[in-house]
Image (cartoon, rainbow, N blue to C red):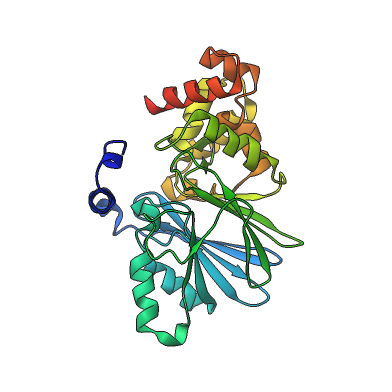
Length: 301
């Protein structure tokens, strides 16, 4: 991926699209189970895509207005929209990588072909690499999905313009973290630094309410938990979650998402870089140096 960053964006996107298409080919015929989490004010439907990606349909229960997060396979999204009889008009793009933003153009085309659907609004960071971007957002920008409130969190590191979307009502809270925060892990530092990831995970996401549901961009639970157990072998929360992940197949591990912010503080070593055990593993004495060292160790696995 670092080599792709040196290529013109259109070239790198085409190569990335080819990679993900080929790597997910063996899974095309296996059923991908969607999972719907119906809360008091919002319903979040998790839609597996490609090899291990997640797309999310977020619906306001009161108005049935909906937004989709990273619709890389738009036809599958539209199937779920029809099944749930909701009104989709917003795309929340976390970052420019093809497996997240690569479906924007096709979805935009579907809306042009079906004018009765209305206008499609595409949110994302200030980045020309995001296709069909209509609304550029930055830290603390807000908008609504029906009666749901959305606040944008700027989390540069995996990419320079990465955005997480915090969605809340009086009853419910959820954050869509793309490739910044995974269940028990974090994204690679492709375009940023350890300081930026520290600011994203510790300075921003860990300050959200502990009960906030965390919807991440990929299914990496098992490998992340195995690494976490290596870093903190005495962490009972990691051990228990690892046992759950090992006892099931891929579809079952998909069901481990969403996590919560409170759980991530207990099981995610990248959110625990201030802990003595994590610093001891890294051989460092400051949180940012620990972040760098732990990510480097994970990259070698």
